[in-house]
Amino acid sequence: MSRDLTFTIVFAAAMSILQTSQAATQELVDIAQVDLTIVIDLRYAIEHNVTGHPLYPPGTRALILPSVAQQLAGAQNYLKQFRYRLKIWDAYRPKEAQELLWKYAQKDQYVANPERGFGSMHSYGVSVDATLVDDWSQDASMPTKFDDFTPQAMLRYNGRDPLVKQHLTLLQLAMAHNNFYGLRVEWWHFTTADWKKYVPYWEDKQMSQTADTPSPKS
Image (cartoon, rainbow, N blue to C red; front, side, top):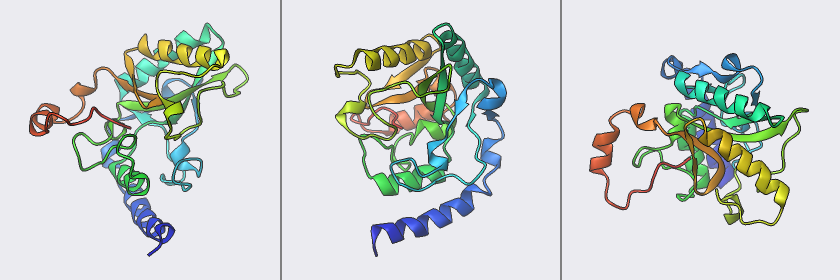
C-alpha cells in the first residue's frame, strides 16, 4: 500500500474522531476571543504543513488553556510597542491529530510520538506555534517556514540576515517575558513554563521513563 493511500485512509478515520471529540476541549478557550488582534492561521487546518493535507476539520478554532491565553495576550501587548503582532500557526492539537502527524512524519527529533512519554504538549493546551506579522499583517521574515525540519529551524539562529535575527529575538523576548520557553529544534514552538501543572500524572510518567527520555516535543 502506498504512503499516500495509507495516509488517506488514516486521515479519513482521524477526521471522524476529531469531529466528535468535543469533551476534551471543554476547558479550553478560543484565542481569538481573548485577544482579537492576534492573527490566527492554523496550518494543520489547511494543506500548508509537512503532510500536505489538512489534519483538522473545517472551522477548527485556535484553542488553548485560559491561563496560557492570558500569557499570549501579554506577549501581544509587548509586541505592540514595536508595531508587531503574533500569528498563531497551531495551538491545541487533539491526540488523534498528533497520531496522524506522527504516522506521516516519523521524525522523533521534531515530532512527539503520542504513545511515548508525554506526547505533544500541544495536546494539553499548553503550547503554541507562533510567528510575527507587522501592523499590515505582513509576515515578518524568519529563519524558515513552518514545519521546516532542518538545522535552519533551530531556536538559536546561526544565519547572517540581521533582520531575521531581529524578528526572531523580538518574538522570543515577547514570549519569554510572558512565561513561555522555546523548543531547541523549532523556533516557532513555545510552551508555558507552568506546563507541569496541566499535564496529568506528569510525575508518575516522569518516574516511569528511562533517563534518556527526551524533553517534551512539538
